Amino acid sequence: MDVTFYFNVKHREQALCQLVGKALAQRLSVNVLAASERDAHGLDRLLWEVPQTGFLPHCAADDPLVAVTPIVVDHRAALLPQRPTLFNWTDGVPEGHDRYERIVEIVDRSDEAREQARLRWRGYVAAGITPKAVDMLELAAQRQASA
Image (cartoon, rainbow, N blue to C red; front, top):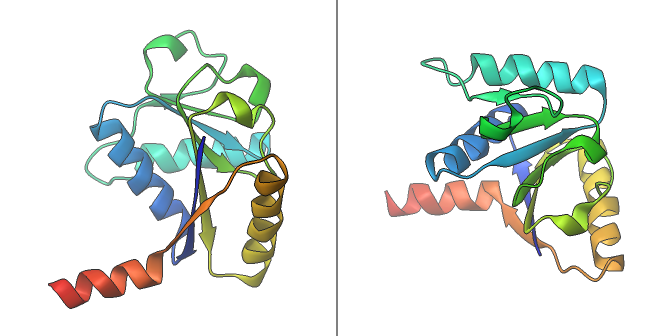
C-alpha cells in the first residue's frame, strides 16, 4: 500500500480538486472519505464548482450511478465502493484503509492540520505502512528553479 502525505499545501480544497482531477484524467476511479455528512456536502459543492470551466463527476456512495461515476464522495467508509485510491478528508486513519492500493492525505499549513497529520502518520506506521511525504513548498520551489 502506498500512503502519500502532501503537506505545506496552501489551499487544501484546491489541492484536492487538482489531485482528483489528475486521477480522473488518468481514467482512475477514486473515493473521497469525508469526516462528516456536512463535510461530504461541502466537498460535493466544491467538486461542482472547481474547475471553473467544468466539474469533476462525482456522487455519494449510495447513489444509483455509483458504478459508472469515477469519483465517490461520502462520510460512510463502509459504503464506499471498491476503488484503488482513497483521498482521506478525515482526522484519522480511515476505516478499511487496508483495502486500498493508495491513500492520499492533503495537509495544509496550519498547526492543527500538521498535528492531526502526525497522528495519522503514526497510525499508518503502527499498521505496518511506511508513508511518503511530499513537501509542496519544496516542489513549487523546484518547479520555479527549473522554469
